[in-house]
Length: 377
Image 1 (tube, one colour):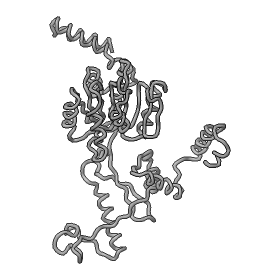
Image 2 (cartoon, helix red, strand yellow; image 1 turned 135 degrees about the horizontal axis):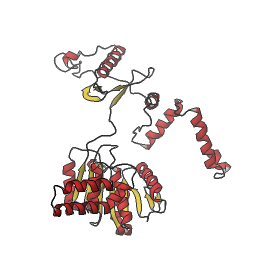
Image 3 (cartoon, rainbow, N blue to C red; image 1 turned 180 degrees about the vertical axis):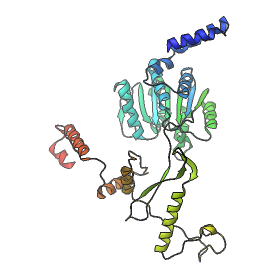
Image 4 (cartoon, rainbow, N blue to C red; image 1 turned 135 degrees about the vertical axis):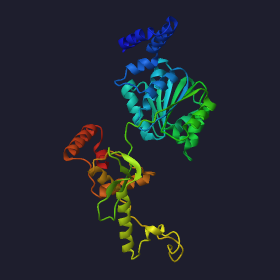
């Protein structure tokens, strides 16, 4: 890298004046001496331009808002904020919207900095809360601000993961209050999915917190494909179909998949026959307009079977599309889904994996649990 820059400097010197060449040389030397450069050199991969731009802005003293698609590498900027905090001997907080993400990030940081340097604070967990690096849910940080916690005195960097939650009607105020009430000495690193009004969002942060660098990357390294799962009834297998048509390269376009439309049309007709009804003619706008409404003035509604949760997981497993995340917005709903999978006899592990899991569990509980505890389990 250094040799390449040196040769580049010699080539440039043929067209630059001595003063311009010296200024360029100093810029290269400053970059080599920067924390951002040292951080980049410590990584096993090359940084993308947007990551370098965000890291340089953060080191220069700006707040940073990074808007990029999932999988683009926004977390690298957060990792640099923590690296910078360690170099400057100050505290850094990493906040996430849910406990599961906090737990995962805590373990990731422990692997890098060790358990003594990292803490975790969620609604029901407190580990090493006075550490230099603390991972927490955003609500915990909001509560610390209102309690005027002394832990905030040495705080200089706060990473707000999934900061676009601010637009959420119910939970958004938590992010808003944190951004407003954090001490002025704290720099914010906001990590956001790509949203339509990110410039307005960045301007608002700047109005509240001062100089803010907006860094946008629209490149999506992890392809985003959308599918629909349909099932005629509980006695048939579910099907996973593309939502959009594919082009000659096999990539999804923005046009709806004709196969999906035809399949839904077949299911609607089948459901209508079961009810002894005739499905409205498509040419009449699905019942809208003259003669298209029922006796009470309402258009007939298609009734489609919703696949069971276990059937969805089973089909995704069959197609090799796991692991995946199934969003269920209640604890009871999650418990019911697990029970449904167990009752359906759903198995996602091979015999060899089952044997390995049992061996690991036996090793973990051996000598750690009493006979009464084992019976309870």
